[in-house]
Image 1 (cartoon, rainbow, N blue to C red):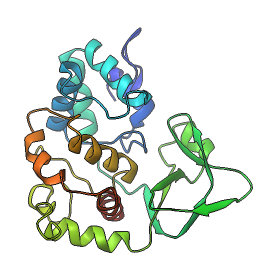
Image 2: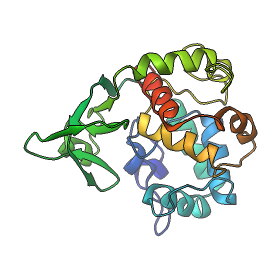
Image 3: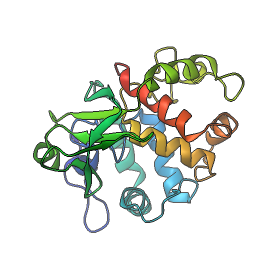
Amino acid sequence: MPDIVAHGRKPDVMACGVCHRADGPGGPENAGLAAEYIVQQMADFKSGARTTSVPQRNPPQLMIKTAKAITDAEIEQAAAYFSGLKPRAVIKVVETATVPRTRVAGLFLAAVPGGETEPIAGRIIEVPESLERFEMRDSRSHFIAYVPPGSVEQGRQLANTGGNGNSAPCTICHGPEMNGVGPIPGLAGRSPSDVVRQLYDFQHGRRTGPWSPLMAPNVIKLTLDDMVALAAYAASLPP
């Protein structure tokens, strides 16, 4: 593991493993991706081509700060390390109309103790199976992603057909099993919360890097329900 992943570089470069975890699966606030894609995204964060629709969220602001301070050599080391790790399933997708009540726990959601529930109301509710283990960045900790009933099948149809002209099939670029093709990232098994945020940011012009023009026309007509369905389907696939 490169030192930049394990320890970062004070004062401005956080250890990559703090958020993305030491073996790369990330969490609801981020993702794990291919080397060329990681390098490009760091360049986009640094140049301002990649921002966020929700400026008050800490994770993108931390990435922008890190990108401005990290060296190209450090980026290459981290990208090579993370892209060389074998992806593994860390998310269980559950279709349900009722979900645990949640609270904000730092950068993600956690179930409120006591077993209270509420309607899912078209949302994705993604929580760690063990809050303590994830907060300790235990690489073996897993997540449950609660999604609306029927959303996985709806997402499968959208991903494979484009949804009656609203979009191009996702599988054309991201691969038939959504595992990525070359520098185009895999979406299979990824945090559905993060996928929805990225689709929303593409749709609202917050991501304008060199590969963004490929995404822009394919997200412009998507509804939030479409985004939730696509993310639910992708998360249900083996990475």
